[in-house]
Image: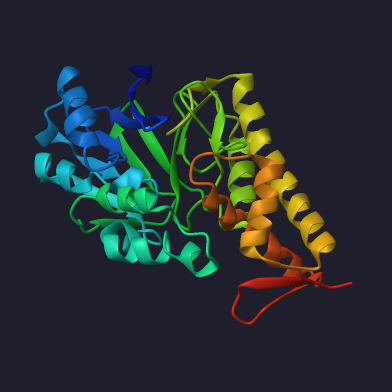
Length: 315
C-alpha cells in the first residue's frame, strides 16, 4: 500500500513476524531491502507489477543493513533488475557481499560462548540468502537521492543494530524509513507480542541513532517488523527503545554485582528471564548484554577475561 506520497510498503509475514520492504517511487524508483531469498519472487516482484513498475526499470536497491532478512533476496532482484544500482553502507557491505563472512562474523560468534543458534535456526540463516551479489555503491550517510522533483530522500547513518545501518528521511512527508535501526522492547509476532530481543551491538551508536530520530520529529516511522507508526506513537516507540537500553544496562550491572563472576551464557540466562522471556532466537539478546558488560569494564566496575568469555565484578 502507499503509506505516504511516493512511499509504498510491501507487506508479508516472516515466520511469526510481520515483514516489510519499501518502494520509493518518483521519476525514478528505489527499493529498500530485498527480504530473504524467496521474498522477491513471492512478494516484491508481484507488488511492483501490481503498481505498474516493471522490475527491469528499477533504478536503485538500497540495503538497510547486513541481516539475512534484509539482503537475502539480492540475487533475485538483481536477476529481475540487472541495471539497478545496489547500495549499502560501506561498513556493512563486506557482510552483504559474502554469505560465508556474515555467517562466520555476524552469526557465528555466539557459538564461542556456548549460546549458538539451534540447528534449524542456523540452517534457516544459511538458506535465507541467495547467491552473493557485489555492492555497487558504498554509502556513508548524508547523501541525497533525488527520485524526482517532489521526492527527495536523505540517507541517514543509524548505527547500533549494525555498524552501517542506513535509514531514509523524506522531508516532504516527514517520514523516516528506519527498518531495524530502533526496535522498542523487541520484535513482535503477528498478534503484537514481544518474542525476539532487540539485538543491538554498538550501544552508544544505538542510543545516538534514537536521539537523531527524536530530533527529526517524524510524523511517520516506517520499520521492517512493526505497524506503521504516526503522530504520538512515533515518540512513544523511540522512547521505549531508550527505555529498553536503560533496563538492559541496569539488569547486567545487577547480575554481575550479585554473581561476582559470570560468563555471557549465565548473564543471558538471568537477563532473558528479567527482560523477556524471548521465544525467538533468545541468544541474540547476548549482543546487548556483552555490550553492557563492556561498558562496566570501561567504567572500571568490571574486568573482562583475556579470552572475552567471562567478566568479574570490581568492588
